Image (cartoon, rainbow, N blue to C red; front, side):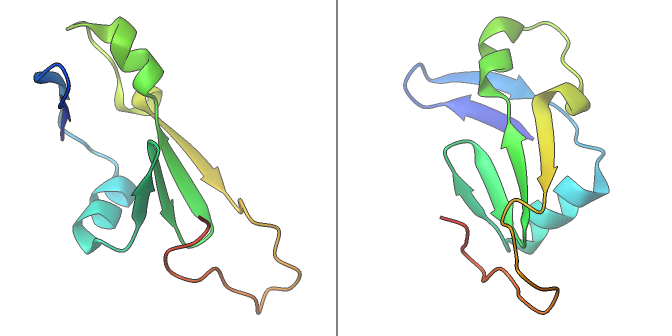
Length: 88
C-alpha cells in the first residue's frame, strides 16, 4: 500500500499490508473512503494520518497505522443492516 500526499508530491508510506480484512476490503472495492476512514457494513477502519506526519521514514507497524471499529451505528435489531455507502 502506498499513501501519496498530492500537495507535497511525496510518498508518505509504502508498506506491505498483511491484514486479510484490509486486503479483502480494498480488493472488493465495497467501501467508502471519506476523511481518512474506510466505511463498510457497520465497521470503520481509520487511517492514522497523524502518525504518518511524525513517521518521516521511520518504521511504523500496520496495527499502529490502522484503527478498527465495529458496530459504529446502533442498530435497533439484528435484522437491520447498514446500506452500502453508509454511514455518511
